[in-house]
Length: 489
Image (cartoon, rainbow, N blue to C red):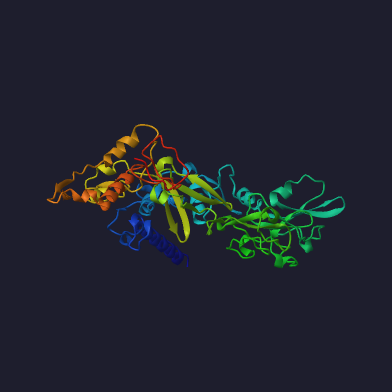
């Protein structure tokens, strides 16, 4: 019996030795697709490296730390080949020796994660939050605690033989320096009946610095939920802290609403005392409403933040003395922003989905008269000009103004519009004169064309200024107050 046992034992050893000999190859890749495995040679993919030794002894299958630079993750004990094929960066070091793998606390709203800085940036981007990475927190427990300490709720304590309450963060409640112990109730309001405090619902409202909305106040003066007249007697609304998205008419400005205080600055409203704003409706409860931040100008309504070009007198015809203006609607008030004087800037306006945007832009008129064809003249990428046709040429689209009381630009530029036209007459047998050459120069249409060219160059030619007063050739002439008086020669 002992002999049989011995033979069986030897047989097991032989099998073990045979298996060991079969698994002494390091396959860079198996036929099955796995990387860097110790396996029989028959299991190796011959398109990759195969060495008769253990993978721990090879350079191509040496284990290290792989960093995914996009996701910010660090994976330990990863073969170099596997890391590089997954577009990672491989280090022949342990993760605690790689600076990019240093962990910190990533604050994500009211939550936190103990991750790398790159991973924090990635998570913040996914949730649409600003990156808040704290490398001074070096433990996961401390990290999670730092996030939950910022959540708000009811901080209940005893004061002067009364059970009272304040709305605080968890951290603030724990740090209160009072003799008696505090109790913190996350997400609860001080007016919650189940807390048995001396705080309860009230009809008072208030505006909160840094916030748009109108808020209820409880009887202890704590901020409660957003004002909603329909919830004045709703016990659940006075018990739990509600998010803006859970409040009345979310997604609307609620401007001048008597019943809802869910204001939104970006939609054109913010919390204000109704008495300070003419035209606002009195709220059902309290004294605050969502002030309408829109504006009215010349009978048209403009939303908060809209800008537009004013129809300034004379600017449409670029008359002497006129200029362009940009108008702004901000917090319910219209303000005026003049563009550069002498029409050296023009106002341009565009509209996207009914929202108007305007800006003052440089008037590019300077090289118009030097353009010899309509294509170059009307190249809007380079200049602001119009082509009047052969004989008149290229002139500014927006005629500039000049310091006419000073010598210089006005004289030199206006002189470019001087035109001479020779008219020849013949005497007839009857003694009358007959035009035989240059006759077009004495027509009203020719005079009109020449004057058009003249006034297009700037404050030149015969024109009326932006307040309707005609110009004079005689600088000594005194304006008599009659706007339609003829020019003196």
